[in-house]
Image (cartoon, rainbow, N blue to C red):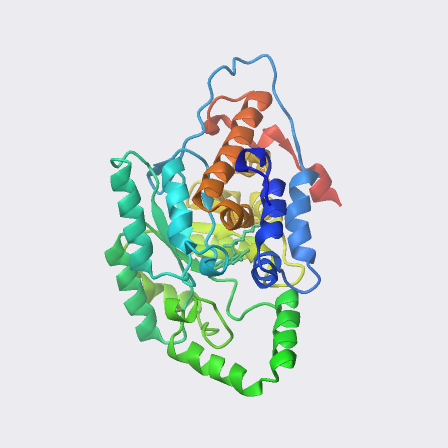
Length: 383
Ligand code: FNR
């Protein structure tokens, strides 16, 4: 028995509800992070280590939370982060997440490692839009894992383009999969239980055959990702993809600057939800670094950020410091697990409500009024 979705009033409540209904294996997949879990904890904690500097005595009767990503207006400055294998989370998988997003006017980035194909997910998007008489501003973007085989990469990009995804989020923090500690224990337990060396070899072969294919459950496994991708590859990617390109997983000022020099349309500061490099910086830390070492790039590219955002006020802090919009991952995954698309809708509402409330208490009525001086990051910077 899980509580009615309206009893979920914060992101933490979705996690509690999800834990009660999710099979252990799925819960481990969702909640797992790299090594000791330090990066994940840092992601969560750093938002609480900077404070607001609110302004008072301002008319905050009406607030407007709209924000555009590459010209596509959304009702909110947050989007649903790409997460693979949602079929392991809810029987409706990615289409169920899309329905929730469209009904609420939130953008979503679809993972290469999805359980359903790029076409099927886009079809659900269109069906839901038609049902709503195209009234929703929601758009879908596509997260791209670089396959080992270039031909396969090009073919996938063409499919994505043909489907009408509005931008390519190329994940650059995963040349190899990080050490997902809890996942490894689970795998080892399974291997011991069934005594199966051969099966894991068969799995590897299937992975090679069907890199990222929904038939394989969309799960990314070792051997599928290309560890050879470099800045020079952006040239051919540009030839195959004429829409916006965002590099997902920028973790220091130097690379942010390089992305700008290479003409990327956006960067996403992220440590992959703490699932890749042990003790990688939080996105907030990287944004502060950019503000110190290359502030000129803010405004030249769209800057996104994700990791550990669990409250509308976290979103506001990121925007004060120059982010265009932010990605929210696990809260939406847990909401989907517990309640399907209704949970996704509820999670959007919870974040949107906190966001509007935070704006009023901070003394702003529109997101373009947010300024760096509205936060005090000295504790984080001086420690
Ligand atoms: C992810 N993430 C991810 N990123 C990506 O580029 N491609 C992917 O397929 C996935 N898959 C994935 C699965 C699961 C279960 C999680 C939790 C995360 C990372 C994701 O896009 C994002 O960077 C983080 O999840 C953001 O952090 P929070 O909001 O989950 O703390």
